[in-house]
Length: 174
Image 1 (cartoon, rainbow, N blue to C red):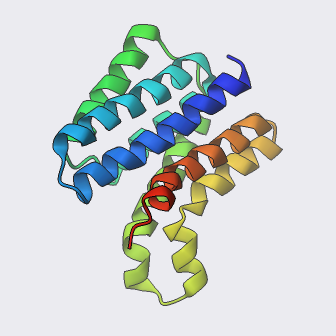
Image 2 (image 1 turned 135 degrees about the vertical axis):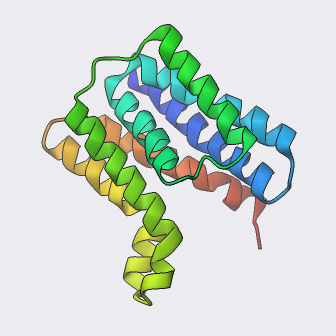
């Protein structure tokens, strides 16, 4: 899959993920949360089945969130099922268990740190590090530098992260 299409899928995935989270958490709108979650699952699922690097990223995020008990609503469950069905029906690329485990651990560290770090320290740097989930960014960057993942994967992951922030910027939350 070419990187332009893959980039579009990463962007859609991050954007719809945030819209789904906000629809449920802030607007108590389960219907919209499910619709946006399904759109996120479609974008990330298509990327996953066509690109091994995307599979590491999106499967790592999913399993990391599962292990952190962040799949905590019906909208998350439906999104997970749709993503899993896409992967099961279409198949995923061959993956290294070691690289997948590293990605899962990075995503898990980000989620746990994001939730707990402010209870453990007052260090602004550490709090911001986990607030913006830098463990996985650094892990993907290092895997790209080592030649395990493409440099494009790091750039696409940053696009995913930025697109996750777009709804907040557009809707200008207080």
